[in-house]
Structure formats: structure tokens, C-alpha cells
Image (cartoon, rainbow, N blue to C red; front, side, top):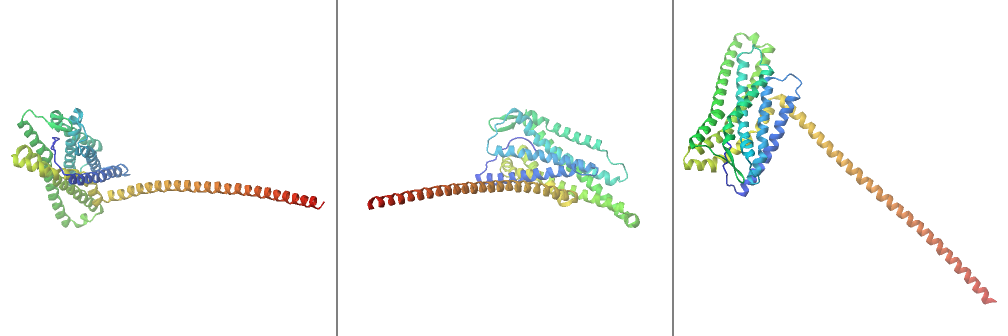
Length: 372
């Protein structure tokens, strides 16, 4: 996938639907890949080489996820591009694709080595980490030409300015081979060798039934089958989701006017959606097949939900206590008011009685004077 901009005209309805899809994909991909990292990091047992590769794949998917907000802003033409943005930020998306496909290829090679040579020593963690570092270096080396030729086209676009059309076509063809064809060929060869070895092992197990039924062999066979099945599904998803994007760039650089129009108006609309959607599928595959990830998802999601629910309940309790305190204060204020009003009524009644007594005494005096 190249970083060259292809501006697609969209209706408001289509843009809103696409916006909703991107937001949902961002949420699912962010939560899912973070859960993958948390499950592996919190794993009590010693982490395997396959765990390290899965972590690296989750990191590359998170890189794609973090590009989604930039793409959403770009849909509304709100990002004013700079030299740094075009030379570094945009090519990082292509680099993350390279990291993903190289990691999948490495996982297939490693799984083939483990199954074909079960009694050889496992690759050390230091060697696996060095392997992953080399993958990142290779990925950035592949996008180095893109970083050089991509320039800002104000106000909102980044364009590739190649010395000639032949240079552009050569780079597009190289991306197609290095990013799609060659990795899938290597993965296919690895799976063919795995399939042949499993077929031979099944034949040997029929001859030696006692060895085949040993707990160690059965556990190894189940583990190999589970990991191989998971990796096969991930590779197939990658091949399907990335194919439209690769075809679109080949049509854009090698096709005629009609093919270029088809690439811009049709292929890129679907390819971009599939490319974004692919970044959130791997955690779903892990959770649906691997029991370790499924239990980890349930555990940490329930923990998060309980914490979230606890915070809501605490907030509700604080609000309830505050409202109860306000009601008590209002009642106390009203009670004091009624008490003061009662005292005032008592004073008024006493005054009225005094006035009545004075008036009665004055009437008596008036009567006496009259009699005299």
C-alpha cells in the first residue's frame, strides 16, 4: 500500500456511514489489540516465541488503528498537511503493513521449524527479539523511498513526486511483490511442508499406536494443530483483505484510463474499508479459537466492567448522599422556621391577652366612675 493520496468523492450519506464504521472499528480494534497485549504480558508461564510474534502483530495493528483518527479528519478536509506529516506520518501506515505481513511470514516459518524439528532446541527469546527488530528495520527500509518522494500539496493532500513514471511503477511493483506476493508464497511453502509432515506423522502413529497415545505426543499434536489453525485463518484474512488494495494500486499505476477510473471510484472504496477492518479481526480470531485468549478477554473485560460499574455506583452513592443531606438540611431549616413561627405566635397570643386584661380593667374602672 502506498501513501499517495487518492481523493474519493463521497455523498454525505456515504461519508456518514463510513464515519460510523471507522469509529466502530477504532473502538473494537483498540480494545481488542490492547487485550491481546495485556493477556500475553500478564501470562504467568514463560512467554513463547509465538507469543512475542503475536505481540508484535498486535502492535502493528495498533499503529493502523491510531491512523484512523487522522483519516477521519482527512475525510472532512480539516488536517493541514506539513512536511513532517507527509514525509514521516503518512509512510508509517505503509511500514505498519510491512510489519504485519513480515510477522505473519515469520510465524509461519517458525511454526514450520517447530513441527518439522520437534526435538531441536526452541529459539531463544533474545534471538526472537532480535528477529522482530530486524523486521521493523526492514519495514522502514522498504518505505524509505516513500518518505523521500512524498511532499505536501496544500492545504490537505500529500502527493508522491517521482523522478519519472517508470520509477513510480517500479516502486509500486516492488511493494506488490514484497508486501503481498513473496510473503504469501513463503507462507504457502511453509504450510505445504507442515501438511506433508503431519501426514507422515499420522502414518507413523498408525504403526506405533503406543507412542502416539502418550500424553506428551498428544499434547504436542494438539498445540501444533491449534497454533497452525489460528495462523492459517489469520493469513487467509490478511490475503483477502489486502488483495483489493494491491490490485487497486497496480491498476492505478499500470492501467489505462478506464482501469484507473475503476480503481479510484470502486476498488479503493472497498479496499480502504477492508484494510481498516483487518486491523481489528486478529483479536477476534484469537478469542474464538484459543482458550487462553478467550479466558483472558473475559477476565479483563469483566474486571473493567466491574470497575466501571463500581465507579458508577460510587458516583450514584455520592449523589444520593448529597441529595439526602440536602433534604435533611431543608427539613431542619423548615423545622426551625416553624419553631420560630410558633414562638412568634406565642408572643403574639400573650400580648393579646395582656391587651384584653388591660381593656377589661379599664372597663371596670369606667363602670365604677359611672356609678359614683
